[in-house]
Length: 349
Image 1 (cartoon, rainbow, N blue to C red):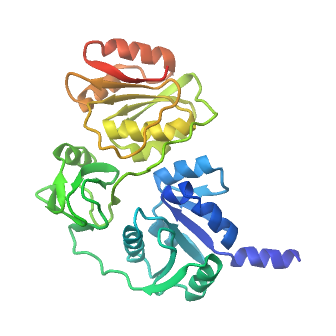
Image 2: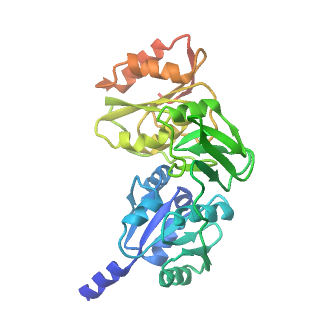
Image 3: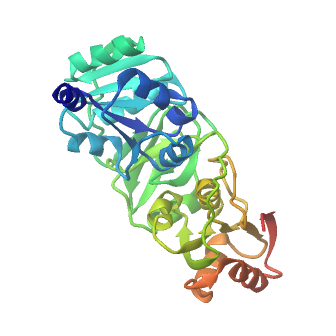
C-alpha cells in the first residue's frame, strides 16, 4: 500500500500557479482538490501575497513560469486566470513560446490549452477532472529582436516593463522598441517619460526577456495579517522597484520600509499589510492606481509639495540612519526633517 501511494505521488503532476487572481477567485483551492498535484509552485510577486493570505500549502518562488517549467522533471501544468479570456490565452501563448510544449489551465474561460507539443495524456486528464474544454493550439513565433508586443491590453491601463509603469495603453496591443539607448513607443502607448527614466536607471532592458504586462497587478484589497514587525531593526529602502520587495522583507531584522514613489508605495503597502511591516512612503501624486491600497499599522505616507518624490526619498535614505533604529522614533524624526516640504496623506500610527 505504501509503495502504491509513493508511486501515485511521483506520478502526480506539479501545478505551477501564476498571478493573484487564481487565489482570489478560489481557483487554486479548487484545482488542488480536483487534481491532487504533488506540489504547487507559485510564480509572481502579487501571487505570493495572495498565496500567503490563502493559507494553502504552496511553495513560492521568484521565477517566471517559463523558467520554472524548464527546471521541472516529469509532468507539470500551468494554472492562470487572465483579466479576460483573451488576455489569459495570450499569456499562455507567451509562456508556451519559450517552451517545447505546455498544458495551460485557463480559469477565465474554463479551457485547457494544449500548446504545441504538450503532454496530451496530461491535458486530457486535467480536462476530464475539471470539466474544462480541451483545445490544442500553436504558439506565436518569437518577435523580432529589439521589439516587444504587449497584447491583451485595455485602453487606459498602465503598462509595465520589469515592474515599472512606462505609460498608458491606447490600444489592445502595445508595441515598444529599444532605440537610441532608450525605450520608445511604436504604437498603442502614451509613454510616461518619467517612468522610462526610472526603468533606465537599472540599465536598458532586454525587451525579449523583460517582464511586461498591463493593468492592475491585483484587484482586491490586501488582508491585514496578525503578525507585526519588531519595533526595532533595520529599514529597507525600495526605490521604484516594488516587485523586488520580497527579497528585502524576508531578511531578518526588518522593522519597516522606506518606499520611494507612488506606485512603489502602493505595492509595498499592499504586500506589507499582510506581512505586518509598516511603510513610510514618499510620493508626489503621479500614481497609476495599479493595486488596491492597504497599509500595516505604523505606516505613514507623505506627499511632497516641493520637489519630486525621487529626490526627496533618496535624500531621506542618504541622510537618515537606517540600521539599527526604532521604527516609531525614526518615523517621527524623518517627518520632522520633511516639515514644510510635504503633507501626510496616510497615517496609521
